Length: 149
Image 1 (cartoon, one colour):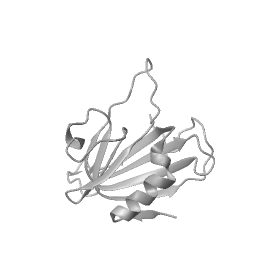
Image 2 (tube, one colour):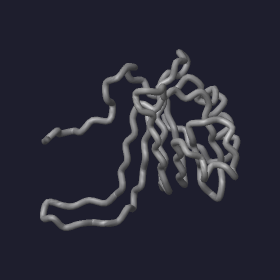
Image 3 (cartoon, helix red, strand yellow):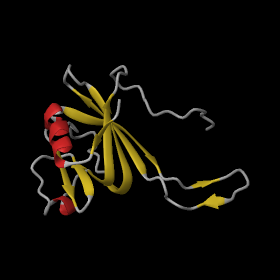
């Protein structure tokens, strides 16, 4: 079941049940633009979908894995740590600003600081989330239906 974040109380509830994303990690991200090239090489060059899905795994038994779907994506700044550093999320920030929902991988970021934050940031018009009942671990969940490469 999907839960929509429409107002501050929804966002506060989500952050509360996620314990601020403490002891979490971004497992996978999938982006769908809406643009494509068809079989006759005709292009539909319009980003009319702009959906970003993100799977988060956590070290909590009550909700070990969630998926967030950001619709009307404005931007994604992805700053993955290399293998010399750990990537666990100790605390995250979620806020509503200028009719957008922001998520970033660091706690305590203010509305004034969010646009200049140097880590991973998602900004979108809408957000919904759900608990995933999938096996935990490293196996990919976003896989191609037909692998042709």
